Length: 416
Image (cartoon, rainbow, N blue to C red; front, side):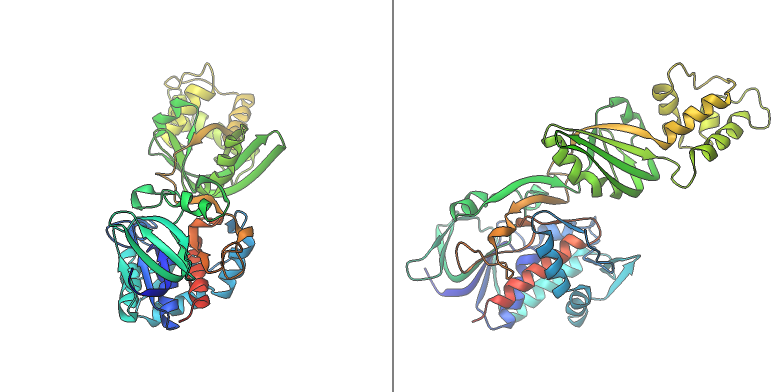
């Protein structure tokens, strides 16, 4: 056992690095322990490697989970302007695409390099390939942190656990420290995938793999407590066994929880969100009649309105008795029914793509057990930040902003 640190951070991700930087700025002797061979592994993959780290539009409701109110308070306290100033004042050039904020070169490595450079400048020690096996209160005050591989014990006055949740286990977030957290007396709200593709029950939908559609999306959740509906709009993507895209990812948390409770979850797509059913029916009538071409098939006609794979699926599966390759006369009653189908295209869900495909974790350490400084109400000097807490944000940089804001708060609470 060597020197005693003011702050020991478990997890060298965005929350842990920001906490270490802030604490070191306050003069605190700080060390980070990272179980992977390099720090920031998950950060490099964020936003498909482009690293959308905050949003110009911070609205109520972008944070979910038991700690949503706490997340709103801390991201108000360390808001987008504060985060942008932190990044830009240290040399990072940024830009926004719509409301999404990125490093100017759209490379996550730029953000990682900035954080690691600050740690180096401030003398923060980072040790990689260090799997924490236990954390205990020391008889001498503070904590003893045990590293499994080399049986090293580190002493610290304060400990921050910032190991993430269970999403993206390949990058180091797999719940490996949950046992230790529970042994310290903390409750972990069951962790589930969020911002995750949703599996569909109808295997014939796999024929549409690769199809992208801009539409309205309604999620209907039926549980023993009743029915709840959630709406989004944007581009969805059909994959081999699932459906994804930002609208689906935003709604996935609610579908996952519904199915976990044994309920029924259905997506209802409005394939023509800007038109009424009557307007769609009129458009279909023109497509099917054309200029009187007697040889235009049903598939050719519907493909004038929809992606041909989607048109084929609807005619084959949803319109029983229809022969897509044949030319038939569609009466108004039929086009009305088809228009209603296209405005209410239902897909039964049967699961999710799992933590390996999830962007974030729902659930985590109960927010009721931490103070507004993110300090444990059970063990003084123990802190939590980032995804390990019961907070998950929607798409758009909110989860990274929460990581930075929560890490900043912990760092401000720890001084030499």
